[in-house]
Length: 138
Image (cartoon, rainbow, N blue to C red; front, side, top):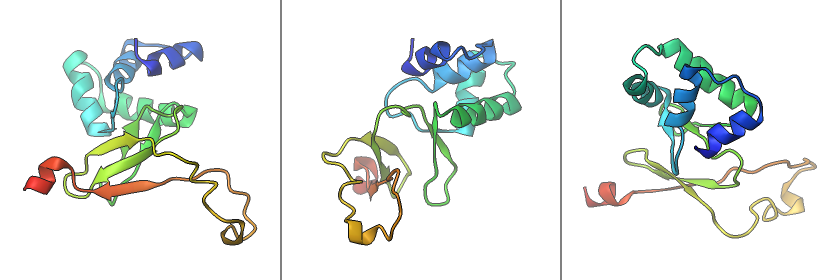
């Protein structure tokens, strides 16, 4: 069972067949599917699942904090189930592929007090960009 399914069961989330399929599609490492990619994979497993159900389920998972919505450079939003493990993203500027990365150090601590302008900083998002091996060869 995936980490996401385990977390949802632990929360007592009502597990319909449709919700289970969406959660299963989001299982695995480096998963950053668009809603349409989730729909395509979910339909392959459960042909009667509707677009509305997939989109609504993704919205609910984001609202619950179990999935992170990742927006990149005007491309379609992607959904990351790695919500409970601190990480950053490495994004290919060519094809848009996304990988989770875990750089050392605390990026929040790297913002000097003089640059906080009185803010109480509660989080930080760092995005690394470059070309994946396939795009670099092209």
